Length: 131
Image (cartoon, rainbow, N blue to C red; front, side, top):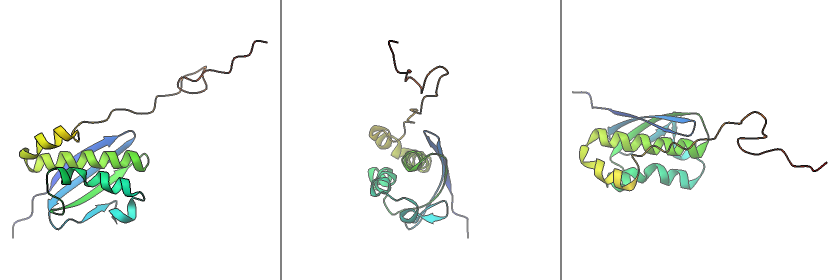
């Protein structure tokens, strides 16, 4: 029996990085060895992860194995979504226009601005005092 082809993609968001391995299957979704329902706490995060599959009408047709590290739940969710969208594009080029139009193939480069010296934060100044 021939080995099934596995499609790989990387997604990043803020300080999170997700490695996504996609192969045709029954819709199993594992994140860092746990089921997605056990790993993600918020219902919104679960919905965001499934958006690329819903956009191309492939919900439940792929097994996804995800390794994600860094950041919080929101950043990890965004990284996973980008990784899944890129992996679907690697699977079939026909999905690209749909995913691009939905905005799932665009890397969100927003990240926390670094703290500067002489300031209390990235932009916050010290409190003014007249005397």
